[in-house]
Image (cartoon, rainbow, N blue to C red; front, side, top):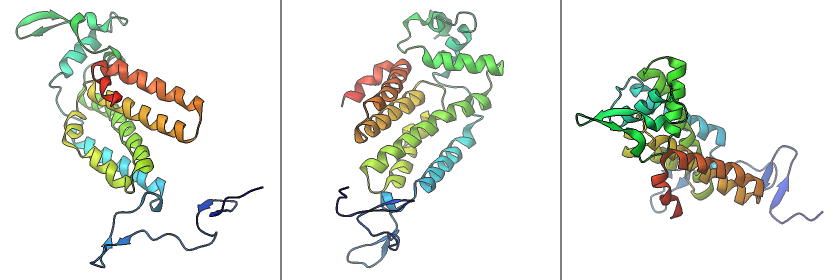
Length: 232
């Protein structure tokens, strides 16, 4: 059959624009004018497995020191909904808490209940509100966001590893990523939806849009008030 010029196939790999058996691409480039090595690798020069390992290790190192961080900020409100879900699973936002010295009802809470359901499940499994197991469980959302960002960075940038590490090191993600609020789960599912959508479009698979839509729906059930940012 017809084979486009520049493609050579072997039983184990497909090499774009290079002959089979040719030496591997250089893993660095020389800075024009200075002759010094620029260590920023191109996306296809850095193996995927190595990039994934570095990203996962970075996330764990970033989160591990804060696993015992005290419950604070808006964590209290979501945990109130989680506690109410133990007796009324379908209506976690029907709980009550004290705000500025006054008892208030959560039925005016502006966010959907999925984050409270997740916390309610953790509460049912652990048996009490304990910082380490709760923060460890929410580390999964950091991993989802990180791998989704790596997938997008490999598609759109020439230095995906550095782009992903920069994303993980942004102050907002470093700080909010240690909380039990809806921000991190929303980011994780939103990034996952974007990564799955781009992959489905690149592969021209209509069926691939289904998991992307499901991930976006989960993001909407975490923090629908911020979903308008996905329209940009």
